[in-house]
Length: 103
Image (cartoon, rainbow, N blue to C red; front, side):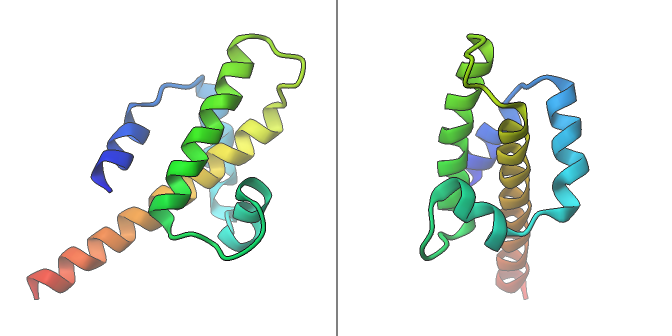
């Protein structure tokens, strides 16, 4: 999963979008956010969810750069919030797994 997190760290987006997503991050609830973006049904684990969100965000980013009339900044921020939230959960689970291995 480190490759996913590295890819996320390498993303470059406008500061305003990132700051807006950071502002909304404390309110992130995966049970509410993920179904909106990934569809309803069983929620995937954080790694697969993050991959799907990154693919979705790439499509949204392309629309933003092309000045597509269908681009919605709130949707973009909402997906970025979900990406940040899932990355946080993934990092926390990796840290917990590392701690379990070391003890």
